[in-house]
Amino acid sequence: MPELPEVETIKRSLAVNQGASMIRVELIREDIIRKREFEPEAVHGALIQKVARRGKYLIISMAGGHHHILIHLGMSGRFYMLNEEEELQEKHVHLILHLNNGKKLVFQDPRRFGGVWLVSSPEDITGKLGKEPLQRDFSSAYLHSITQGRRTAIKNLILDQNLIAGIGNIYADEALFLAHIRPDRAAASLSQQESLRLSRAIKRVLRQGIENRGTTFRDYRDGNNARGGFQEHLQAYGREGEPCLVCGSLIVRQKIGGRSSHYCQLCQK
Ligand SMILES: [Zn+2]
Image (tube, rainbow, N blue to C red; front, side):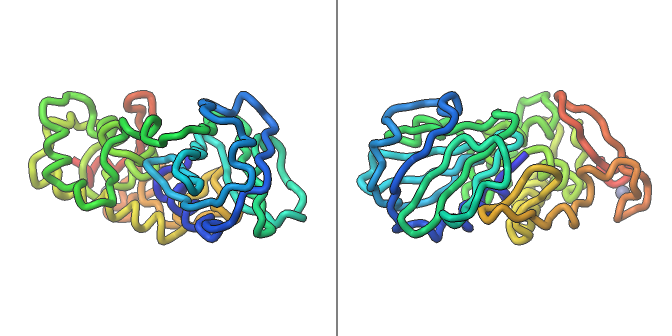
């Protein structure tokens, strides 16, 4: 599932389209639109002012400030750029944005857990999201404050999009491995020192994910429909039964809050 580093990578690849104009919105599958505050035709001829990200949402904002196209990739979605004359290679394309710079932006999503929002104010959709973990105000003090009084597993806490925006299963497992904290520890049991380690580990794995253009386990592709590279650097996620790169004992997998978690029983306490 695309997480913050994957969506950020796509955003950066698609930023070249800022300043281009929308020729036409081709809506192939109506029910991919999750909220429709304007008709697709309303942005025909409009200038793309900004391509942004908040949490796992991509936000394409038109000049004038009243028309925003939000895209969430769900489990299996891709959003990428092709030259206008290039043929679509894959199925399940639900939306195509045709631009005046010779490009088209293609949204495809076989499982359709993702979606598209046509809204006048992106905050209506993203307003409840928690802090952006790569920004300064996501600090160890903030992380420690949200652990207080919470019995839920620390893994579940850092996956809660209303507390921290953009972390999913892969980067949660990697951050906890790096911080030497077991994913099933009660959030409230973290010491201040552990919150500091975990906040630093979260920032570090997200930055490394972005530097490597995201993690491709199965579906994810970047804004040029190319695979990411961070799967080569994973230390915990997807490595059950393989030796821990630090101590050599085998990485285990355990369900926590319905999600598979991968960790080292020796290194993580
Ligand atoms: Zn280990």
